[in-house]
Image (cartoon, rainbow, N blue to C red; front, side, top):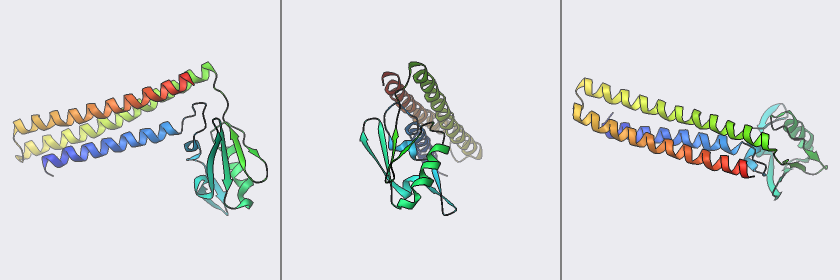
Length: 186
């Protein structure tokens, strides 16, 4: 693998780590309705676990209300049971045609817990980025050892990998700070 490809691949993998982190952040309740809260919910639909988002449309009629409208009205009870069984901790309201999920206001203590959860997710994301950096550095060391690149080139490329790593880490910190502020300020 060429040296520039090592950096390019490292950058791509770090961006994937950031995207995973963003997706995980989207699943955190911040006291406001967010359709991504329902992304991980699977509904037992004719014996097959089916993602809720494939079986229904999710809209946000008010700031703290999610409205789930199933494409097949007969699946309404199954969807309600799946939401109840999920780790959302919210009881849905079924009116026979749609399911409404009211997102409760967060207490100060709960906001602090969620902010800590964001911090843990951020650290997990940074670890993923550092693992990508380690793999890239190992590849560069192997290339220098095999004589594919010189020692000076290796050092230069390692600096580039470190810069990409620093940028990815700053992006994760920025996203975590934004989410923490959103949670603590409500």
